[in-house]
Image (cartoon, rainbow, N blue to C red; front, side, top):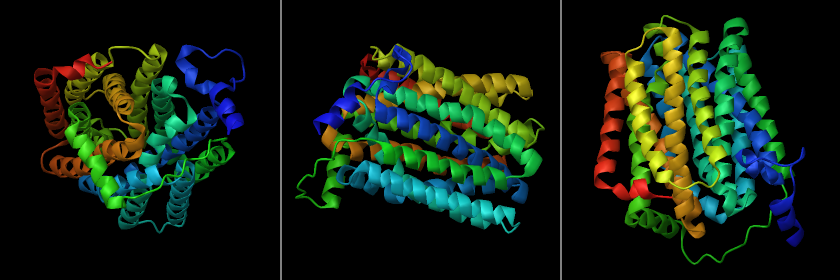
Length: 419
């Protein structure tokens, strides 16, 4: 075990000295994770972008976009809290290999259905639900797994680099998906996604991890779950941070579901426009992630979080009034930056505060706000856009997010003082 610990703590990255921005990459296991996840996330964004536009082409209805988003997210409400219990009981690497393999299989199924011309909206909804089930167990384990790859001193940097990797894929994946969709069709996007999962599975298998300590369990899984819920309910700061994530996921992020319809109905574009919009948002988030990573283990995280809670909804309001593609893309860069600052700081602060014994369960509750809030947001946003229009829907969601941010600033000033 000592040898593994030494490798985990001190193995230098190839290429010499690692700068502060990329400090977590000096850990061998984290480098494997970063490369594998980057490839896999690129494929995932290709599928997400192509899938949304395919649904809109098949149905010409924002309601169906909401249904697919709801199907992908509703398993979070059913399984994610239990997934957090499992993440505190089983080796997280094993759990991640299982979930990633399941998502790979479903990507191949969707590709086969699309190649053969048999794909129907209901099949996409069913497969989105299946991916959602896998995500419900994958997300808590993935969040809690970070501290197995780096030491606590570099946790903040690793979380920022995770976000950066996600946004690098967001910048490139949707744009490439838009081009591939336009020239050869969506099936190739789904196939590439299936193949991309191999990278993260291989990375997990190659890691040199310390054996997970086997704890004697005297409580049932239900009691473990109650313990996690009670901890969050009685911890004022963690409770507030999770409530911020919940409100933004339910209302602020509803615009993501509407992007395929927005590209066509508001901007008069096509699949390529949809891909560019997703990539512009990802570029802004990537800039935000790089900024946060370069700060290292900085102070005043609460102040930066507060900035994000205000910038994100304010720029969403501006986006709702813009109907010129170049300016829309520019505003989306700012929206992406605000999103990244907001959610990166939320993740970092929750992980810094929570105790290790409850990490999996608390992170499952935090992650539930994102994966569980977005499907409900997708459902109401799709229905609202069908009845009114896309800009009015985005304005409403942004106003709710902004109002809650102002409430937290006014009533819970301790959040601004977090370090």
